[in-house]
Length: 378
Image (cartoon, rainbow, N blue to C red; front, top):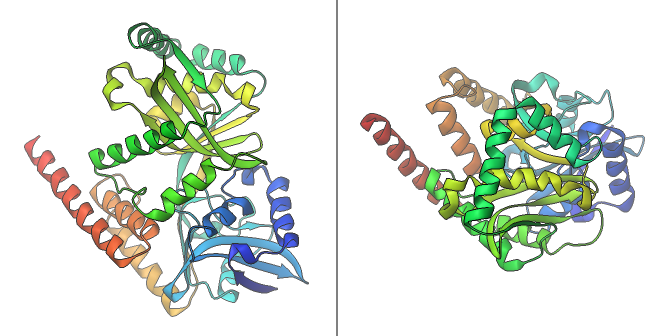
C-alpha cells in the first residue's frame, strides 16, 4: 500500500475515473459531495484542498478529500458545506493504519459516510439525515406523505392556498437561473444566520466563490441547481445546491422573512417535490439538522457518524485528549457545551485566516452572552 497526497487539480484522469467507479458501486456514496467533482470545485477556491490517494499495487483503492492543516490535521473538504464526508474506499480498507501511512494525524468528522468501515471504530455518536427518494411519480410520494400525516398536510395545503390567495399566484421555477434571485437567497440566509446567532459561513470569500462557480455551471452531470417558489413575480422561498445526475443536495434554504406568517418553507418543499419529475431527480437529499422541518417530508433516513479518527502520533494523541475532554464536559449531547463546541468547530472549518477566526470567536462570544441573558430573563 502506498499513499500520495495532492491538490485535486493534480489528479490524473485515471484516478478520477477510479474515484467515480467507487462511488457508483456503493449506494451510500451516491451523493454529489462524496465524489471527485466536489473536491475539484472546492480546490478551485481553496488552496489548502488536498486529496490523499491510497494505492495497492499501483491501483487506486481509496480517496480522502480534505483540507490539510498543521500537524497533519485533516478537515472534511468544503466543510461546513460538506454535510457528508469520509474515506471513499473499497471494502476491507484499514482507514486508521492508512492515515498514519499518509502522514495524517487526525480527522474530525460530523457527517461520516462509512459503508466500507475504514473509520468505523472512530465513531463516537450518530445523527439522522433526511432524504426524499422517489419510487415512481412525485404525486405518488406526496400522497404517501399525506396518508401518513393527514392533519399536518391538510394544514400545509391550507397555507399553500392562503399564500396563493393573499400574496400572489404560486409557481415553481426549476431550474431557476435568475442571478438576482440567487443573490437574494444568499442575502436571506446571511440575515437568518446573524439573527439566530449562528456563524456566518457565507462570510469568507471562498464559500461565496464556490457557490457562485457552481451556480454558473450548467452542463454535465455535476452542476449547481436552484429551485424557487414565486408568488406572482415575487420570490418567496428557494433552495440552492448541487446535483449529480438524479441526486440533488441543497445547501441554501431561504425564505422571505416578511412572509414568515405564511410558512413559505413548508409550502415550498411540497411544491419542490412535485417538480422533481420534470427535473429528472430521483433523490432530494435535505441532509441532517432541523429535524422538525425536514422529518415530515423524508421517508428515507440515513445514519451518519460523528467523531474523531486519530493516529498514535503526538498530534493525534493530543487531538484524542482534547476530544475526550469535550465529550466529558457534555459535547455530543444537547446543551450548552455541545452548542459551544459546534460553533467553534464551524469557525475552525470555514475561516481560513487568523483575522476571520478572531472575528468568528468574537461573534460567538457575543451570541453566547446574548443567549445566556435571554435564558436568565426567561
